[in-house]
Length: 152
Image (cartoon, one colour):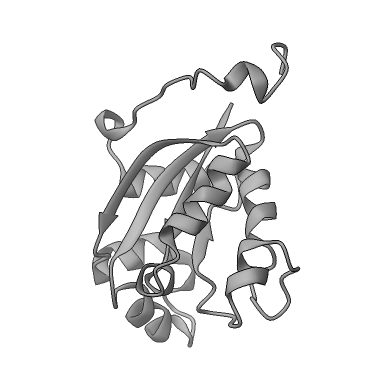
């Protein structure tokens, strides 16, 4: 099992797409093991997007991510990082394939609804920014036997 951080960004929250987006992850058989709504502070934004702070587009990114609440989640499943990224589609909603979350609901590069970790190291780092160990609630859904083979 692998875990990844997912943020439903301010545009997702403001457009009332939270339930539909969460449903896509659940429909895929992924397990949400932590979830909360929060307001990202400028300090948290700088930590999360540390590699972009010095870039010219960063002020707009910070203004966007701190502009309204987000929903932070830790999602668990087989190859969860790649599976989640596939569900999201291309970063730009203009280029994302129909059937993906961004392809169906986004028409923007920046307002692309959802952030997801891009690899194991960033997933671990980002999870620690948003959640303490005590906020993670691992569990095995009773329908797991119907979602994957016992040896997966």
